[in-house]
Amino acid sequence: MTDPLDKATSKAPPTLGEGCLNRYDPDALGPEDGTEFPDAAQLWEQLHPQDEPEQKP
Image (cartoon, rainbow, N blue to C red):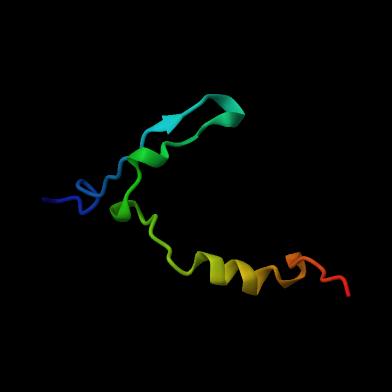
């Protein structure tokens, strides 16, 4: 193997929709695609504290 990039390939997951509605197929995604993020809700709260609903007295 003379070129180290010969085997450096990747494959995009299948998509749904067309044009601006094009998105990855959620049924085709799995942990090997990096879709597991159990702390997503906690991160969202840290980044968007102003999005919390106002409490009325």
